[in-house]
Image 1 (cartoon, rainbow, N blue to C red):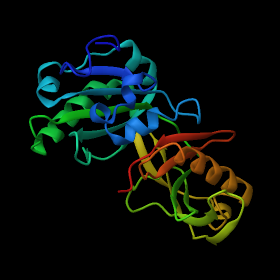
Image 2 (image 1 turned 90 degrees about the horizontal axis):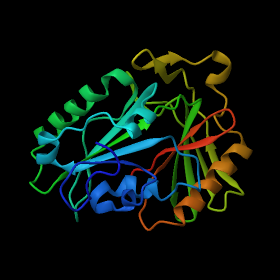
Image 3 (image 1 turned 180 degrees about the vertical axis):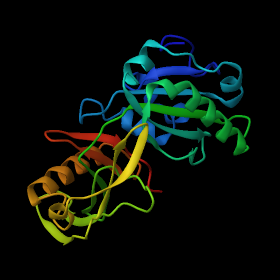
Image 4 (image 1 turned 90 degrees about the vertical axis):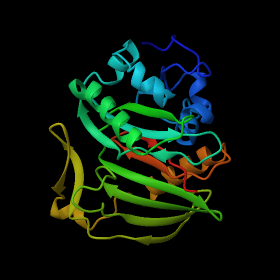
Length: 257
């Protein structure tokens, strides 16, 4: 099955790169992916393929490996899934899974179908799965805009709970990103990092535990980027950015309401 097969209104299973225009339709792809699809060209995104279809179709026509999927999962991948019903909030299906080996893609999709079926979805529910090239980030920033301020939560490694929640610093900046209003730096003894076939909690070097994840210049850069992205949408979202040595990558943007 590939990106050219089927039509989103036909009830078929779609396998589409997130850059495809149909991925910006929330009624078929869900609110989060529709927003993320609209950010391409404005911020770096990992390669992502979206699979979407009615639950009965997932059971009858499970997707085979396609050229688009092979490109994304060449080494390792992350996966997120939702049940989408037009006019209702999207329902998360299972946790976000990171750094999965390419060999387990088919097994992972089957497991997600089983989890979704156990949630007793309505007949018109669509299962939407985002398969994303895994990014082994140095740090993560979660950004939310409210009342002319930007709140940043920052942690070393991935913002994934492993044997406990991540340790976040917090910063509040003006919406134009020019001024830091408040900052709280915590001890960060553990960070979630890539491990064989998944992730694990690792000790943070003592010299990095109590220093800010972002310096003021980095905080202003991310806050400004979040404000620019936020200005182009009507929904309220939390922007999840991954920080690499020389790049800021948008990993996800879940709704906050």
